[in-house]
Length: 342
Image (tube, rainbow, N blue to C red; front, side, top):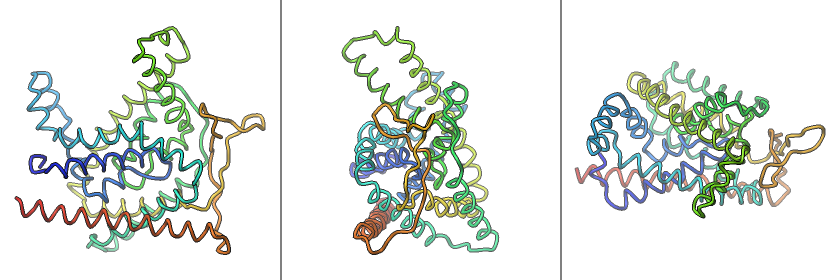
């Protein structure tokens, strides 16, 4: 599959990885949804499934080229290179826009999710009673998650490892936002804000050959937290992909129906018109290491159509839908071209 890709395919796959990485960091948005709509979700799942005992034996026997080909290495490398690069670049730009143009960013994501629902539903042919019930069940789960109250922060390393497993579901299960689940678990700021900022500082120190952080208990604690979260994410990514791959192979239509439900239910999380409820301690609002107020949850409301900002937001919703339509058109064109070449 990877061998038939042109240079433009590889560049666009890296860009898809960028989009997936940025989406994974935004609470309410699922990187798996990006993968599903962009047309590489099943390849992602089945490639991750290849990380198994056979792949491990290939590594042990130093058959690195065989391992690379067996796990669809070029595909995984491009996707995860894009996601990692996004995490340290695009997602930080996104943080800026969320701070200064929050309504319009959420509106764009809302439109993109609406577009993704259309994209998936139009190719879904089996509207049986069983699948409709499954869709409704998925919607109920998605809406229920959006209404849950977050837990308190917990830096226990085993719990952080568990957060890694749960948080990575946003990549493997479209419609479930890993970042939002981390908010519900109470560890979003600890794992995706404070720890990342600390990692930046540590990397900068390493490049400047300054290793004083080794003697700093606080910074070493953050390193342990990052390591636990990373290991949990890696384990969760492989583990959940095996489960989802198994389910897709045997109950493809039911799983797709559940995904449609999850994505539809996630609309409540990314509803553009909402007010932040900030996390407080002893009556005072808490701030993260960047000086931003820590958001605990959201209070949603209906827009005022007499305000110009509402109509701008609606325009961005339409813009988000158009983004998905353009991606869909490019994906279909690319797919047809590849079929012809084969």
